[in-house]
Image (cartoon, each protein chain N blue to C red):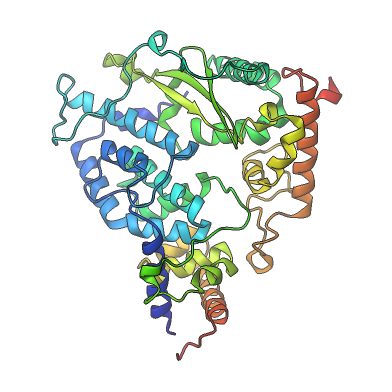
Length: 294
Length: 163
């Protein structure tokens, strides 16, 4: 079988088992619809990253389209204006039919709110001190910062998204807790254009990200079955990697084994952090970390 | 605080047009390469993220030499790996006539870089230079991934280059 024939087989296989993520006529709005449509060629429920991406697309699309034609429902290209939420944060009610928030969920929500409040007030030191550094860096902050902040080579529009109201718990999935927070664009140009009240929700569905402080300690080990996820988060932490977990947790290709993806040293570190996180959580003191150092 | 949105707010219709052309030209390639690299579950998410990022930053990507390669890296780095071992769906019945049934397992036997390299060059139409740039490796390293990947694929499938 020639190289070209192998390539054709791979292409045929991948095309037969996936559907288009976007179409040739994709606009921001249409992309969202495609991403959200479970019937669109096999795409399924959005995960946190894709949902966040979709929200960003909606936000940017709304700003761009509003700039061009703020009073009409159709853009200059005839596409519908993205249906971003324009209501104020006060008008966004928590889901009324959700089960009562447990103390554990409330602790996670409170922590998220305090963290965001300090972070977006520019008080990074307080945020870092307040939030359990290890657990957040490993399973929360790393993922959030990865997506929600600006880095030197990767400016992100969501850096100008600030929370404007209380978060609330949505549903607890198999991967953890869903925390929903209303936010607002504070981009200076958006403000200048009168779009500062642009408000929408950020779904922090990072169940894995906040697993350390929402997962019952007894269940926390089950999360370690997804240790690859945690290893991925470790990738972007400067504190804990330090050569223990490489940026590519798989190691050199030549020794790559799909069944043993993470180095033992990295796996040991994840287990250690998980143990600390579980102990910290059981101690019921989400403001102090690590529990043994308090 | 950076104002990452600033450039985006000034987005023009031509940027929109650029993105539409970009999506038309690269969606299939991004989906194939990211699914091949990460498996179906994470790969589809990665492709969605890559395209969403391309839309979000279309003004900037439109100036790049290899925006698809950049989008690939964004999708690859931001998608969550739910399993250490990538999972590939079985060959659907309607494709059995044109796809070796052992191909999913054969792909899984390759390293991520090998799968990505083979798919980029032989199933997505990227040049070796483009693929090397997307994977952030040298062309010679890419060639190594290609050679080993193709050899491993044939071994797993039980076929020869002359078959």
